[in-house]
Length: 166
Image (cartoon, rainbow, N blue to C red; front, side, top):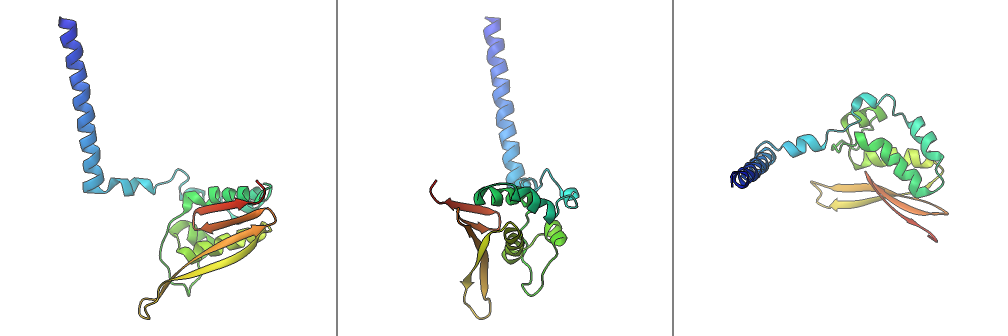
C-alpha cells in the first residue's frame, strides 16, 4: 500500500511541476513578451556577417543545378541575419548595414536582385500599391526570378517556386 501511495504522490508532484511550468511560461509570454525577444535571436549572430559576403553566397549557390535550389541556398545564407526595418526608399543601404540593422522590402529585393542576376537568373520586379492615400502612400516590392527550368517568387524570406516538367 505504501508503494501505491508513494507512486501517486510522485505522479501528483510531477503534474504540479508541469502545471506550474506551463503557468510560468504563459506569464513570460504574456507579461514580458519573452517570445518576441527569443524568436529573433539567431544562432549565427552578427559576428558572422564578415564571413557572409556576397561573393561567397554567389559562389556556393551557383554550384547548384536548379533555380529553386539556388534561391533556397541564398535564403539559407541571409536567413540568420534577416530583420525587417522600415527605411526611407530614397536612401540605399550597404550590404553590411542591411545585415546588421535590417531593411524593408525594397532593400531586401535589391539584395536578392543582385545575387539572382549574378546567378544567371532573369528577373521581374513587382511593386504593388498598398495604400493609395496621397498622404500615406505605401507600396510593397518583391521579385520574380526565372529561367528555362521554372520561376520563383521571392518576397523577403519567402521563396516559392514552380519547376516546369517536374
